[in-house]
Length: 81
Length: 81
Image 1: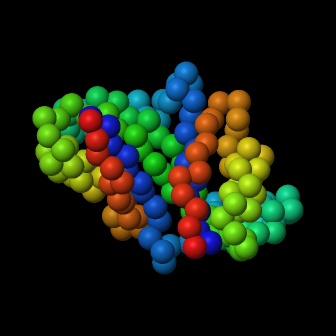
Image 2: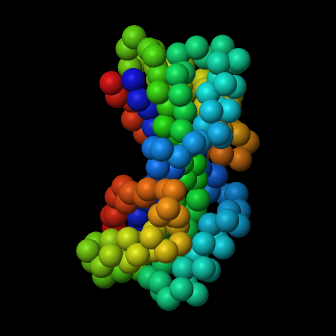
């Protein structure tokens, strides 16, 4: 079973890396770029009997390992066989 | 216009960060986790007149700034108003 998890900084938290990318884009001439925020994406392979069980384990894993709940939000984008 | 871009290491490239996460998951008791690969996700706000134009600029931006085409693949997941 494959899952995709997206971890991003909470909207209130400053993202200097994203700001640097936006500035670099502008200086490269991509003036359409207004802002950039960078997050992390995890592709997780799971050995779970059903989607529901996989999602429960993933949810726990995100809260304890993949994301820092103080400053980050996470989202399980999809879980599929 | 908002776009989501996913940058990941090419399948042949080793991902020590992902391996470390997989090991940490196992040691935390999440034995369902088989492997993890970590990528980057960029949320880009664009000021473009139409989706096609936004996608062209984004594609260029990915190849030149967001991804290193030697070791990384990128994918524009979605572009929407």
